[in-house]
Length: 159
Image (cartoon, rainbow, N blue to C red):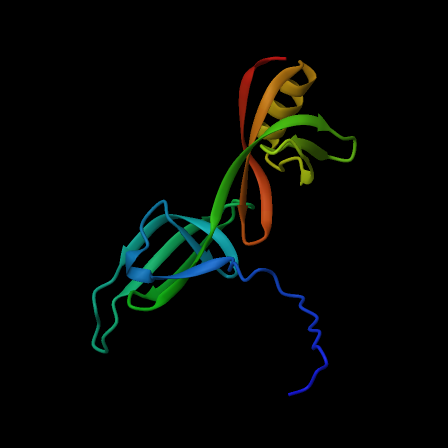
């Protein structure tokens, strides 16, 4: 064999996939599904009977977890659908910058500064008002398919 070492330039991540396959017939209401490349929460599932040529079909109505847009898809129940890995993490709010980014405190004591304020006006107002009043706020961040967004807020009392 040769004595020279091979150096590979790897631009891939650790291989943790953003989605996993699940049979369409097993996906239920309040589950998650990828429709048109977007992670969605299923709000309605209806299954049609098998027709002349075999497959029962599942009709999914789902809402995008980040944009709140309604999406629909029809898939044969025996086929696989992509299901996103959805994680929800709580962080303590440290600061809100002028440009709309937030500073969050992670469990390990580090800061996370790459998240924008949410686009939902109601949640945005609650966060800004609570922060202005000097309350200790904990925000829930939902992440799926490489996207992250603040989705909820908890007040843990005054500082």
